[in-house]
Amino acid sequence: QEHRKDFTVFSGVSHPNVDGGHPSDISFLTAAPHPASSSFRNTISLDQHIAERIGTLTRFPSLTLAVNGGARGLSWTGTGVAIPPEGRAADVFNQLFLQGTPEQVQAQIRNLDRGRSILDTLSEQAGALQRNLGARDRSRLDQYLTSVRDLEHRLQESRGWESRPKPVVHVPAPIDPASPAQYMEKVKIMYDLVRLAFETDSTRAVTLMLNSVGTPVVTLAGETITDSYHNLSHHGKADEKLTQLRALDERHMKLLAGLMKDLKGVREGEESLLDRTMILYGSNLGDANAHSTTNMPTIFAGGGFRHGRHLALGSGQDYPLPNLFVSMLQRMGLEETKFASSTGTIRGLEML
Image (cartoon, rainbow, N blue to C red; front, side, top):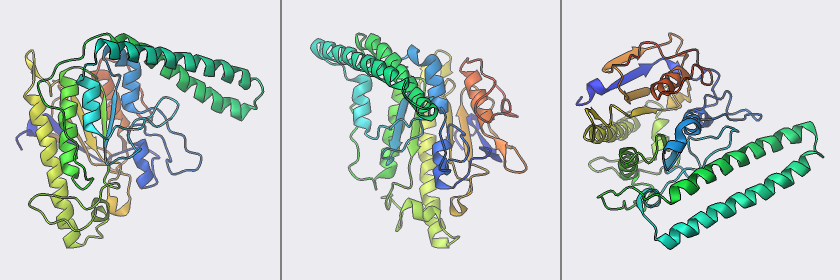
């Protein structure tokens, strides 16, 4: 309620031809079709598309984070390779803000140079190998070489940032909860980290995977939770499970409200940080109980748009969510008219 004018709720949106139930999470920011297919190959995710274009403006082109995600995140390279997420907030905090000694900085620069030389050797060897391969293997090797070239570029950019001082923040380093059952505490710590990253302009793109599948019975103050988050989402309309699921989802909304409040509390000139930050919050499943991938629940906040509305789009629950991605890219100053299965910008969303 406190932030009612700061966000828009969308319904009727989905990713065309993205099906398969749980596996559809890997297409949440790519919209690549048929993720459960044996021949599936992912495409670039929205955050990495942004990182490729403006990632050099910040120390980190992007941050890929997860809560109880393991190796499963939301970010994918241009060649469809998954980027493993960081799950320990303390480690990310150290990367963002812990300044090494001059000797450590020089050692890191030498490591970056060494990494590039290794990649140079690999590229030469792969080029020689390519001449003796069939068409299909050459295609796969070309994907690999493209990834190598992308990594070389990122290493070069990292080298320049190593010699610049890191931003100073007057907050203690976070302490990661030891148990995955402390799920909501983990989410709150990650939200705090995201705010700091944006406030210090350490990056312009962050993904955060909130993984219910990897979460056991959640410890939730003031509530009795008796089953895992994932099992509760497959509630079969049982009242007891729905009551517990509602408690978990309401806590998620309170945490999201807290993030919005914190972003509004940071001023950048005449605007708040929330005015200059877009938050896309949603799920790959419209109905987890039925494994439905249509009518994906989506909240979009901040970014200097006119909010405070519910936009019902797509009577068949098939309005392309990537249309919102195009609007987001354009709001960041990128001259993009197409992303994945988009058909234009999203209908009804206006800038202030």
